[in-house]
Picture (cartoon, rainbow, N blue to C red):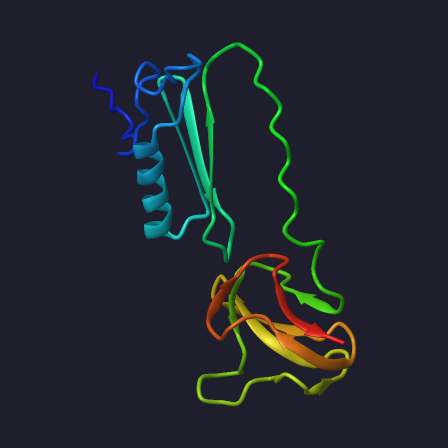
Length: 172
């Protein structure tokens, strides 16, 4: 009876003895593994990746639309970890009048290539007017204006990927 081993990611953290800080004796971050994981994120377009090796866990994630990369490393040490202060939020939320994407997909500004866009900055729209199309799983979904007003800003480009809740436009 043969057993198959699962293939593990190529980026592996070094053993704790190699990543231990000399001054404190606590496990440190394997910079090489972090670089490999960040490179893998960029190549694959993923937003987060996590690996575990010999009880050490490394998670690398990046915010959508941002170039910042967050690295978290958990050591198998049973000692309680010191609380990490929370980072200040980048913004207080979406702007007033924001039209969020109701799904993950690809946004299109016009009904088909070569045609004029549904809306433009400065255009007045009524509630229910089509603003964009979001393609999700090969299905085209019309995104309509939740209220009437003037388009103050279009926050996405044609054919770009969007996340759930991402601001597509601002209507005032």
